Amino acid sequence: MPENVEDVIYNDMLTDGIIGPDVKKLGKVVDGGKIVFVTSPGCWGPMITPNIKGGHEVAVPVEVEGAEVGDAIAIRVEKVEVLSKASSSGVDQPVEGAFVGDPFVAKKCPGCGEMWPDFEVEGIGQEAIKCKKCGAPASPFRMVHGYTLVIDSGLAISVDEKAARNIAEKAWEFSALPKNSKQVPVVVFGKADILGMVSRLRPHLGQLGTIPAVNIPDSHNAGDFGTFLIGAPHKFAITKEQYEIALTDGHLDVDSVREGSIVIAPVKVDGGGVYAGDVHAMQGDGEVAGHTADVSAETTVTVSVLKGLTLEGPVLLPPEEDLPSLAKPWRKDEWERVESLARKNGIEAEPVAPLQIIGSGPTINEAATRGFERAAKLFGMKLEEVLNRVTITGAVEIGRLPGIVQVSMQVPLRILEKLGIADMAVEHYGLPY
Image (cartoon, rainbow, N blue to C red; front, side, top):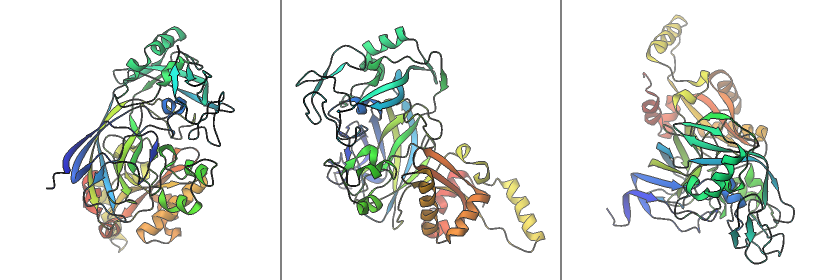
C-alpha cells in the first residue's frame, strides 16, 4: 500500500466554511477504511463569527482511494458521540448592513464596512462580538427567540436566564470546541426565552457527503440554499449550470443520517472528498425554526467505493426504524405470506429492498419532483412508475425546509443488482431473500 494511503484517518481539521476542489484535503484513506471526524457545532456559531465564510464549519475533506468522477462512495455511520455539554439555538434575524447579499456568506462589519472582519469577544450577549478594527458589533445575525440547553445522560433541558448567563461566561468549555475551531460558540448569547423545555438526544449529521465540483460555502451545498449562489453579488457566485451539475447535496439536515445509516454519495471530484459536520443533538423533520441544537461531536464512518454508480444526489439507507411504515423491509414470515398470495394469483412476487432518494430544490414541491426524477433516472423507470411505487410502497418526508426531501420506495432487487448495491441493502436490512 502506498505510504500516503491510510487505513484510518483522524480528522479534527476544520474549514473556514468553504468546500470544493481547491480546498486542501487532509489525506487519502484506503477503500474500505475509516475516518474519525471531530467537528464543531454547525449553524449558529459559524453564522455569528464574522470571518467564517460559510454558514458552517465542517471537517476538511478526505480522499478515498480509487474514487473517480462518476463513481459513488458508500459512507457507513458507525458512531456519533456528542461532546458538547450545552447548546443554544433559535429563530434568526439578519442584521441590516452586516452583509452583502447573503448573511451566511458575505459578512461585512456594519461599522467600517470591512469584509469578513477580524473580531474580539467582549463579555456576553448578542452585542459581544466586536469588529477588531472599529469596535462595532459585527455579528450578521441576532437570535429573536431562542433557548439554551444543558445536555446530560441522553437528555436536554432548556435553562433559565441565570443558568444561561453562567454557560455564556464559560462558552468554550460548555461547547467543547475542537482545538482547530475558529467559531464563537453561540451559547455566548445567553438566550433563555423558553424554560424547562425537554428533549431526547438523537444525534445526526446535518452535513455528510462528498465535496462539490465548484468552490462554494459548505452550508449552500444543497439544492435549496444553493440557489442563493446563482448570480450572487459576492465572490462565491455560481452559474445556473454549476448549480445543476456541480453540487452534491452534502448539506442534508436529514435526521436519519445517524448511527446505523448508510449515505451513498456521488463523486464529482476525483477522490470524492468525504467531509462531515453540523452534528445536531436532535431535530424534528423540517427543522422548522431554521436551526436546531448544534453540538461538537466525534463521528466514525467507514467508506467504500462503488465503481460506475453515477448519482446526481445522495441515496440513503436509513436505520430500519426510521423508514416510513410502507417502506419497511419484509420479514421472513411476511414474505412467506406474500409468496402464498402471489401463487394463488398465478404470479411471482418480486423481491425488493427499501431505499431513499434525496431530492432538493428551492421549494419542497420542487425538491420532491427532483427526487422523483432522480429515482426514475437511476432505476430506469418511467416517472409514473416511480410515483406509483412511492405512493404504495413508500412516502415523501421532509428533511429540511425549504427544500430537502427523502423519497422512500421499495425497489426491485434486480434493479439494485445492476447498480451494484443489492447485497448492501440485503445485508443492511437483513432481508429474507
